[in-house]
Length: 270
Ligand SMILES: Nc1ncnc2c1ncn2[C@@H]1O[C@H](COP(=O)(O)OP(=O)(O)OP(=O)(O)O)[C@@H](O)[C@H]1O
Image: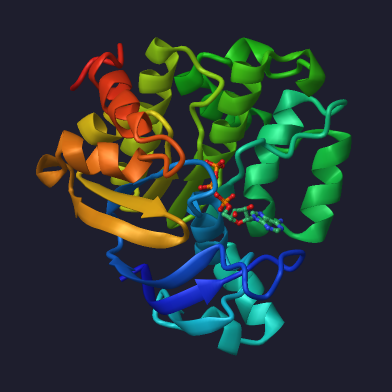
């Protein structure tokens, strides 16, 4: 089992104590599972990914990751646990003047000694590995390009190449396809999914492309207002469930708009 959450509630440090980003959330995720998180903006998808990445500490509930409660470990042990996880934030934290090669190699930092990391900044120690990680995303020609010369979509795929170079046992990926066209989005998702499958890593991925999630993930968790609305096999999720998930309480038509836009989603089902 990768993750076990039991009645977890969490709020962000800047938020009011009564304003929970996650409320009473219970779920278990087996090693190697591939799960899509969907739900409207502000539903708590990022907060859940950050909780799983030990970046957001729950204020209530129990959690176990790889058999341990990360918040009962000392900070060195928790650091080692974090090295088993790869969190890809919505906007990849790529320093603008950095070369792509160094940005990608940063994915391997948790495995490296401090000396190796410093040496790599002067002359990349594993440029060939960075090249190989960029290849599935067709970005190998950008190996020595500066990050701020990449397009938004290229930057996003460069962030995904980091995942490939890491030795993570779980990929926690926040809207990795938001800057990609439909064809590239599907290709990028496939690369991530194949990599996760090959190394039997867990993949939890938040997505706004609902039809892409339904077509490509065996299990979907629908979040809204910090709660799980459904957690089901994608085959068991109906259009009505999707419409209800995205229903805007200020506008009764919003649910049908969500259902209609799902129906005309140009993304091909696999
Ligand atoms: N750093 C923060 N400080 C305070 N509140 C926050 C912070 N980050 C998120 N929140 C709040 O937590 C709730 C959940 O936000 P979260 O980012 O997890 O949602 P999301 O489903 O990922 O949204 P989106 O699809 O728009 O990215 C929201 O009400 C949001 O305003």
